[in-house]
Image 1 (cartoon, one colour):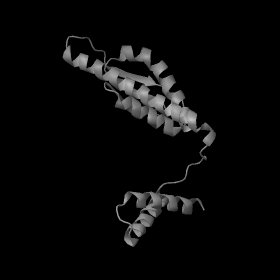
Image 2 (image 1 turned 135 degrees about the horizontal axis):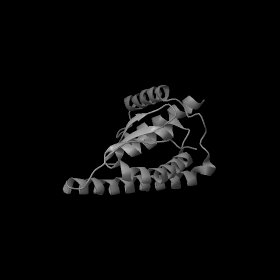
Image 3 (image 1 turned 60 degrees about the vertical axis):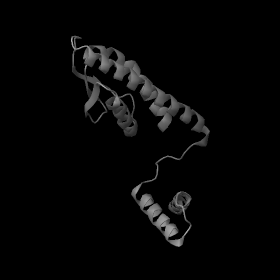
Image 4 (image 1 turned 120 degrees about the vertical axis):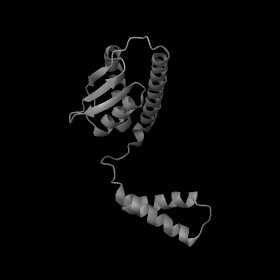
Length: 159
């Protein structure tokens, strides 16, 4: 029943996006919806409507936290480029994962890699990330609080 309902809803979404309401468009929508349903596995946990407002608020906060990190890191990298005499201490630091979810760990690694001046080089089975930073001495001090905040928000989003 789940698959039929999902195929129906995806077909309706497809038809809403197609400019003409013809039989070939409907068949194409059913075909695309069926392929999507077969390729994407269902979520292991149902959506809890009661937690939806807090999830949306956590998602908005997470977007702002990542955007803030991107802007601040971009300015720091620009200052490094514009001032070549500034002393750099590049290195690889370890960032322990604060989450159990593999999806949260992957999203966290992605957020770290997006920030200028940092890139996740490797990730262990337990979620420990080895991250190359342009200034490893400053990064170690700020990592724990940023990691804690991102992990908390990701847990709220994915819970």
